Length: 233
Image (cartoon, rainbow, N blue to C red; front, side, top):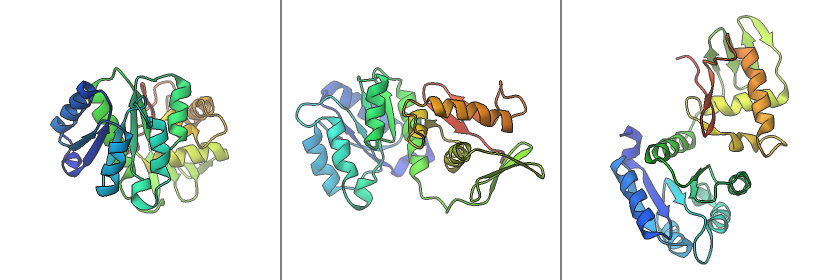
């Protein structure tokens, strides 16, 4: 069980009673405190009364669907509007994922799913959402180091040229070091919503960072999710 999970309060929104209870059971066993709602209307009442650390949100529900609810939530002021959202739905096509992430979801997982993967994705979102110090300092990547505040990569004392897109991608990954980030989330910062530009930038960054780009140690692929930066220390 994650130590950080104990105080986390999650809201599961799903109109299928069986699935909703199964998800609630999985997450409770993982150490989270879990509330549940059968539809968007009930979820609205709960989020307006209670502060949640994360929402697990279905899409296909009677009345207001999950996409509409996510859009409404992101339009709320203050902490409520910044509540992390993981969309969990049978609608797993790339266009659906892009639509959900474009509305502000933090991650998107298709049904059927592995309970362990759901827990790991939730923990990764919560790590990224945790308060952080202002970006700055350096992270070490073997013989290379990356200055977050300046967006500069160095190999020893020699600067390594980065494009603006590569520097931005490396900043995103470094800010959530050791936590996987969905490639579609990374792609929001590029002009290519399908994520192909991110894949190209990752390949180029590996050539500049890794001793063996074909077997990366630092800029890792997380199968079924996206990418993760795993610096030294």
